[in-house]
Amino acid sequence: MKDRRQPVLDFNSVSKRYGATVALDDVSFELHAGEVCGCLGENGAGKSTLVKILSGIVVPDAGEIHIAGQPFRPRGIVDARAHGVSTAFQELSLVPTLSVAANMFLPRPKLNRLGLVPRRQIEQEAEQILQAHDVTDISPAALVEDLPLGMRQRIEIVRALWRRPAVLLLDEATAALSDREWLFGLVDRMLQANTSILYISHKLEEIRRLCRRCVILRNGRKVLEDEVAEMSDEAIFSSMAGRSMVETSTRQSSSARPGATPVLEASHLKGPGIEDIGFSLAPGEILGVAGLEGHGQSRLFKALVGLSPLEQGTIAIEGVPTMIRSPRHARRLGLVLVPEERKSEGLFNDLSTQANISLPVINEASPLHFLNWAAERRLVEKVTPTVNLAERYLPLSISALSGGNQQKAILARALLAEPRCLFLFDPTRGVDVGAKQNIYAMMRSFVREGGAILYYSTELDELVHLCDRCLVLYRNTIAGELGPEGLSQDRILALASGYAGGARAIASSGGA
Image (tube, rainbow, N blue to C red; front, side, top):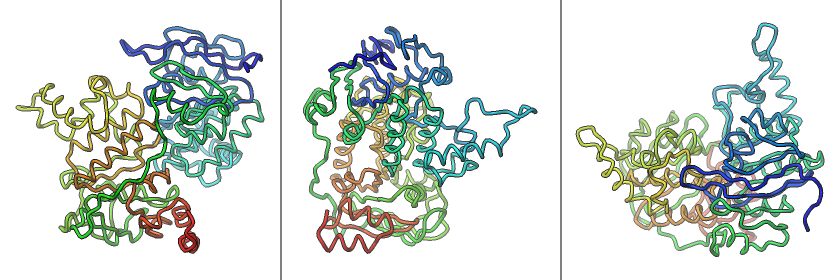
């Protein structure tokens, strides 16, 4: 039944085009005080454009937006915030070279009489804000670039919440969080203050947990809006994708080759953030890595490609000991990293999608140092079908693509380097169900052909369904290894929480 109250947000017949591409096409919905409305859709469905319009980043071509009955035409993020709309972005908007406190008050921090930012004062105020939002483990004086992604995600969320907006946009807010209940508790408090929340997520269980209503977008159009309780999972996936789809991935038979020379062996690795880590990775194997936020997983992946220094330990590739000097050297040896943050670590935003993909083989398309565009295109088209990236995206700027298609481009670039071993660090973070299935298919194809994958994910069900074995990190070292018979979410969590005895008890009881 339609709510007859005046909406806090009225998004009415809004459209946005980029040349021939229709990003939003006549989309309408309302938000009322004290409610959470979900927004679902595959990557490229229009969710990011909707968020950018409401945040003041993008100006719509048609339609009207009203906040509390007043026209809403923001000229930027600051203007949108001044009119009561605040956003926690999926692709974090923090400035990495500034402190947590400075980021909290951007873009207009307080100034003293000399026109300078009073560092101690803003740190004290930032600490009070963080504590008010149940964040006690982050120093306001810390540089953002020194913090793990999960901590930066929490800062992004708190920065959006603390000004008490009338309308709050949460864009894939749990994508990097190890503790979703922290956010859910804050959402409950915001609802008590009558805040209206638009919750964009690919995680159906979160939509069901938080939202009364849900809007589903496909190809820029609203295809369904209904009470969440009235929507079946099948109807939701069918509306999102225009076809029947299941969210979970079923376990398939292993491609691992027991007895073969390991593609990669690491012994007693020690360096910043890692302590005495060792493992081997066989051809055809997907080896999972699990761990709660900040327990060494990021440092391990970076150390394996020369991005983080090693103080001791050995690495052998197909039985040959080697010293990894840099990511370029690692790539020549067949080790390729798909990094944690695609925006800041994986993309060249000023280049086309094709140029982003072709970087590992650009010399093959540049005889006499002049780029042959057709030759470059042929090289790129060798790998784009493997990740299901449509050819129409290749000439476009990579920044114009949805997050899922950007991730497909990064994976295509990794495959074009012809790796022996892929290090995939949370590659499905913030991507939709369809893109996840494409990534899973690419992984299985890669290991069937003899490649090996080291795979970290914050989604424990991915580790259970995709991996042959799983290493669980706790306090920067390996707390345990789970084989195919003992691999379950409960056991992973027990080890990741430092409760090795609990993991053994779960294993002996046969619990899942």
